[in-house]
Image (cartoon, rainbow, N blue to C red; front, side, top):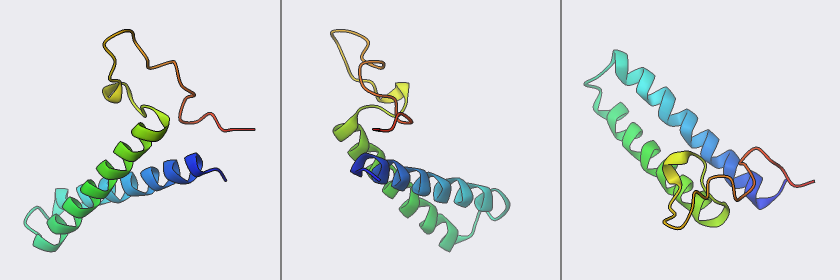
Amino acid sequence: MSERQRLLHKVCVAGFAVDEAVLFLDTHPCDKEALTYYEKARDEKNQLVQQYVEQYGPLSADEVFSEECWAWTSAPWPWEWEA
């Protein structure tokens, strides 16, 4: 597994943790421990996404930063693995 694949896997795991925390908070909105967990998971996911974007390019169209041209398609897609 390449470093790119490892980092993308970490992003996916962190995203899953955020999604699960959100589902729990939907039914337990005042649970302080769950809120703390959500904030930590969200921050970790955001940090991993930022790291991925800086090293390999955007994971979503929201992360495309280009004034010259639309760069969304200029790098390999996140699901395109090296052979």
